[in-house]
Length: 52
Figure 1 (cartoon, one colour):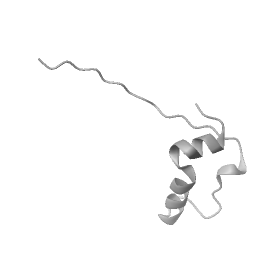
Figure 2 (tube, rainbow, N blue to C red; figure 1 turned 180 degrees about the horizontal axis):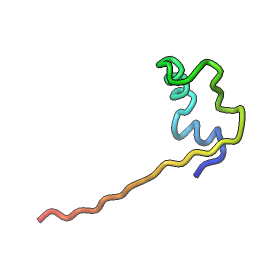
Figure 3 (cartoon, rainbow, N blue to C red; figure 1 turned 30 degrees about the vertical axis):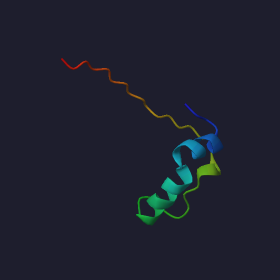
Figure 4 (cartoon, one colour; figure 1 turned 90 degrees about the vertical axis):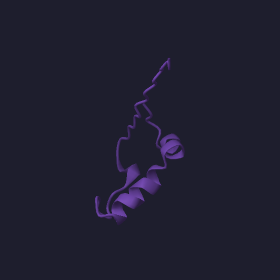
């Protein structure tokens, strides 16, 4: 979990993603990342396999 917006921005490119969502019509122009509490998480799955 990341609660720091700037760290999350560096890792996930949130501002770019927000801009694309606004352009695509998923969010309105008033969407703002810094207007309230912030939390982001990213699930990570690891698969280990053995081929015969």
